[in-house]
Length: 214
Image 1 (spheres, one colour):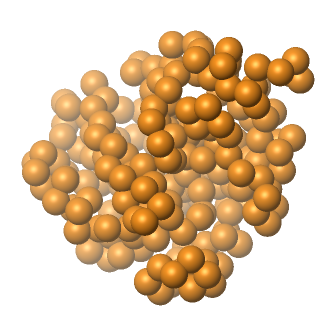
Image 2 (tube, helix red, strand yellow):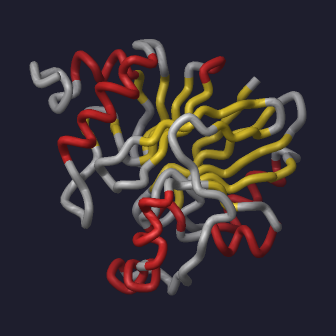
Protein backbone atom coordinates (compact mmCIF):
# COMPACT_ATOMS: atom_id res chain seq x y z
CA UNK A 1 0.00 0.00 0.00
CA UNK A 2 0.97 3.61 -0.50
CA UNK A 3 1.97 5.51 2.62
CA UNK A 4 2.80 9.20 2.76
CA UNK A 5 3.99 12.06 4.92
CA UNK A 6 3.59 15.73 4.04
CA UNK A 7 6.68 17.79 4.89
CA UNK A 8 6.36 21.58 4.41
CA UNK A 9 9.60 23.12 3.12
CA UNK A 10 11.00 26.57 2.32
CA UNK A 11 9.66 29.93 3.40
CA UNK A 12 6.74 29.30 1.03
CA UNK A 13 5.64 26.26 3.13
CA UNK A 14 5.50 24.10 0.04
CA UNK A 15 4.11 20.62 0.61
CA UNK A 16 6.85 18.13 -0.20
CA UNK A 17 5.41 14.61 -0.07
CA UNK A 18 7.42 11.64 1.11
CA UNK A 19 5.61 8.61 -0.28
CA UNK A 20 6.58 4.98 -0.01
CA UNK A 21 5.56 1.41 -0.73
CA UNK A 22 5.07 -0.37 2.57
CA UNK A 23 5.82 -3.74 0.94
CA UNK A 24 9.32 -2.79 -0.26
CA UNK A 25 10.13 0.36 1.80
CA UNK A 26 11.12 2.06 -1.47
CA UNK A 27 10.31 5.77 -1.38
CA UNK A 28 10.12 8.94 -3.44
CA UNK A 29 10.13 12.63 -2.57
CA UNK A 30 7.62 14.65 -4.58
CA UNK A 31 8.55 18.33 -5.06
CA UNK A 32 11.61 18.58 -2.77
CA UNK A 33 11.75 22.36 -2.91
CA UNK A 34 14.40 22.82 -0.21
CA UNK A 35 15.39 21.99 3.36
CA UNK A 36 17.09 18.83 2.13
CA UNK A 37 18.51 17.86 5.53
CA UNK A 38 14.99 17.88 6.94
CA UNK A 39 13.83 15.65 4.07
CA UNK A 40 16.71 13.21 4.40
CA UNK A 41 16.11 12.96 8.15
CA UNK A 42 12.47 12.05 7.48
CA UNK A 43 13.56 9.29 5.09
CA UNK A 44 16.09 7.99 7.59
CA UNK A 45 13.67 8.10 10.52
CA UNK A 46 11.27 5.80 8.70
CA UNK A 47 14.14 3.57 7.51
CA UNK A 48 13.15 3.94 3.87
CA UNK A 49 15.18 3.49 0.70
CA UNK A 50 14.88 6.66 -1.37
CA UNK A 51 14.77 5.73 -5.07
CA UNK A 52 13.26 8.68 -6.97
CA UNK A 53 12.78 12.45 -6.88
CA UNK A 54 9.50 13.42 -8.55
CA UNK A 55 8.61 16.92 -9.77
CA UNK A 56 5.17 18.29 -10.62
CA UNK A 57 6.45 21.50 -12.23
CA UNK A 58 9.43 23.79 -12.53
CA UNK A 59 8.84 26.51 -9.95
CA UNK A 60 11.66 27.08 -7.49
CA UNK A 61 9.75 26.24 -4.30
CA UNK A 62 8.95 22.80 -5.77
CA UNK A 63 12.33 21.91 -7.30
CA UNK A 64 14.96 23.91 -5.40
CA UNK A 65 16.40 20.93 -3.51
CA UNK A 66 16.08 18.32 -6.26
CA UNK A 67 19.51 18.55 -7.85
CA UNK A 68 21.32 18.68 -4.51
CA UNK A 69 19.38 15.59 -3.42
CA UNK A 70 20.30 13.86 -6.68
CA UNK A 71 23.96 14.60 -6.01
CA UNK A 72 23.70 13.38 -2.40
CA UNK A 73 21.67 10.23 -3.02
CA UNK A 74 22.20 9.27 -6.64
CA UNK A 75 18.41 9.14 -7.13
CA UNK A 76 17.09 10.17 -10.55
CA UNK A 77 14.93 13.24 -11.02
CA UNK A 78 11.70 12.32 -12.81
CA UNK A 79 9.38 14.99 -14.22
CA UNK A 80 7.90 17.38 -14.94
CA UNK A 81 6.75 17.58 -18.59
CA UNK A 82 9.36 19.01 -20.95
CA UNK A 83 7.24 22.12 -21.51
CA UNK A 84 8.58 23.35 -18.16
CA UNK A 85 12.22 23.20 -19.26
CA UNK A 86 12.28 27.00 -19.52
CA UNK A 87 11.40 27.26 -15.80
CA UNK A 88 14.29 24.96 -14.85
CA UNK A 89 16.60 26.99 -17.08
CA UNK A 90 15.50 30.10 -15.17
CA UNK A 91 16.28 28.72 -11.70
CA UNK A 92 19.19 31.12 -11.03
CA UNK A 93 16.94 34.07 -11.83
CA UNK A 94 14.06 32.59 -9.78
CA UNK A 95 16.30 32.13 -6.73
CA UNK A 96 17.59 35.69 -6.97
CA UNK A 97 14.10 37.12 -7.45
CA UNK A 98 12.63 35.37 -4.40
CA UNK A 99 15.65 35.68 -2.11
CA UNK A 100 16.46 31.97 -2.05
CA UNK A 101 19.95 30.50 -2.05
CA UNK A 102 21.41 30.25 -5.55
CA UNK A 103 19.97 27.30 -7.46
CA UNK A 104 21.73 25.99 -10.55
CA UNK A 105 20.05 24.99 -13.78
CA UNK A 106 19.50 21.25 -14.03
CA UNK A 107 17.88 18.76 -16.38
CA UNK A 108 15.73 15.87 -15.12
CA UNK A 109 16.80 12.32 -15.85
CA UNK A 110 13.35 11.72 -17.33
CA UNK A 111 10.63 14.00 -18.60
CA UNK A 112 7.02 12.89 -18.15
CA UNK A 113 3.98 13.06 -20.37
CA UNK A 114 0.31 12.06 -20.31
CA UNK A 115 -0.34 8.37 -19.57
CA UNK A 116 3.21 7.65 -18.40
CA UNK A 117 3.55 5.63 -15.20
CA UNK A 118 6.19 5.91 -12.49
CA UNK A 119 7.01 2.97 -10.22
CA UNK A 120 7.92 3.38 -6.56
CA UNK A 121 8.46 -0.10 -5.21
CA UNK A 122 5.28 -1.99 -6.11
CA UNK A 123 3.29 1.23 -6.53
CA UNK A 124 2.35 2.48 -9.98
CA UNK A 125 1.66 6.22 -10.20
CA UNK A 126 -0.29 7.44 -13.21
CA UNK A 127 0.77 10.70 -14.85
CA UNK A 128 -1.74 13.36 -15.86
CA UNK A 129 -0.46 16.36 -17.82
CA UNK A 130 -2.36 19.32 -16.35
CA UNK A 131 -1.12 22.59 -17.88
CA UNK A 132 -2.30 26.04 -16.90
CA UNK A 133 -0.32 27.01 -13.79
CA UNK A 134 2.72 26.12 -15.89
CA UNK A 135 2.67 24.50 -19.34
CA UNK A 136 4.50 21.38 -18.17
CA UNK A 137 2.70 20.71 -14.90
CA UNK A 138 1.95 17.04 -14.13
CA UNK A 139 -0.11 15.29 -11.46
CA UNK A 140 0.80 11.97 -9.82
CA UNK A 141 -2.22 9.72 -9.21
CA UNK A 142 -2.40 6.38 -7.39
CA UNK A 143 -5.77 4.81 -8.24
CA UNK A 144 -5.66 2.09 -5.58
CA UNK A 145 -5.24 4.65 -2.80
CA UNK A 146 -7.60 7.21 -4.36
CA UNK A 147 -4.83 9.76 -3.85
CA UNK A 148 -3.51 12.47 -6.17
CA UNK A 149 -0.52 14.75 -5.68
CA UNK A 150 -1.55 17.81 -7.65
CA UNK A 151 1.16 20.41 -7.07
CA UNK A 152 -0.18 23.90 -7.75
CA UNK A 153 -3.06 22.91 -10.05
CA UNK A 154 -5.73 22.77 -7.36
CA UNK A 155 -5.97 23.84 -3.73
CA UNK A 156 -8.46 23.55 -0.89
CA UNK A 157 -10.81 26.36 -1.91
CA UNK A 158 -8.76 27.75 -4.78
CA UNK A 159 -6.81 26.96 -7.94
CA UNK A 160 -3.31 27.68 -9.18
CA UNK A 161 -2.16 31.09 -10.28
CA UNK A 162 -1.96 31.65 -14.01
CA UNK A 163 -0.28 35.06 -14.14
CA UNK A 164 3.21 33.59 -14.51
CA UNK A 165 4.91 33.28 -17.93
CA UNK A 166 3.02 30.80 -20.13
CA UNK A 167 0.25 30.41 -17.56
CA UNK A 168 -3.27 29.98 -18.95
CA UNK A 169 -6.42 30.06 -16.83
CA UNK A 170 -8.60 28.39 -19.45
CA UNK A 171 -6.14 25.50 -19.74
CA UNK A 172 -5.99 25.19 -15.94
CA UNK A 173 -9.76 24.96 -15.48
CA UNK A 174 -9.98 22.53 -18.39
CA UNK A 175 -7.33 20.28 -16.84
CA UNK A 176 -9.12 20.28 -13.50
CA UNK A 177 -12.59 19.63 -14.88
CA UNK A 178 -11.65 17.15 -17.62
CA UNK A 179 -8.79 15.24 -15.97
CA UNK A 180 -8.96 15.61 -12.19
CA UNK A 181 -12.66 15.78 -11.28
CA UNK A 182 -13.55 12.67 -13.35
CA UNK A 183 -11.21 10.65 -11.11
CA UNK A 184 -14.03 10.63 -8.55
CA UNK A 185 -15.41 12.60 -5.63
CA UNK A 186 -13.71 10.30 -3.11
CA UNK A 187 -10.20 11.05 -4.38
CA UNK A 188 -8.08 12.85 -1.80
CA UNK A 189 -5.43 15.24 -3.04
CA UNK A 190 -2.27 16.77 -1.66
CA UNK A 191 -1.87 20.32 -2.97
CA UNK A 192 1.39 22.20 -3.31
CA UNK A 193 0.46 24.44 -0.38
CA UNK A 194 -2.09 24.27 2.41
CA UNK A 195 -4.37 21.50 3.66
CA UNK A 196 -5.58 18.44 1.78
CA UNK A 197 -9.08 18.15 0.36
CA UNK A 198 -11.14 15.84 -1.84
CA UNK A 199 -12.14 16.33 -5.44
CA UNK A 200 -15.78 15.99 -4.44
CA UNK A 201 -15.52 18.80 -1.90
CA UNK A 202 -13.86 21.09 -4.43
CA UNK A 203 -16.34 20.21 -7.16
CA UNK A 204 -19.25 21.59 -5.12
CA UNK A 205 -17.57 24.30 -3.02
CA UNK A 206 -14.55 25.70 -4.86
CA UNK A 207 -15.61 29.11 -6.24
CA UNK A 208 -13.51 28.57 -9.37
CA UNK A 209 -15.19 25.25 -10.16
CA UNK A 210 -18.83 25.40 -9.05
CA UNK A 211 -19.77 28.04 -11.60
CA UNK A 212 -21.62 26.75 -14.70
CA UNK A 213 -18.60 27.09 -17.00
CA UNK A 214 -17.87 23.46 -17.84
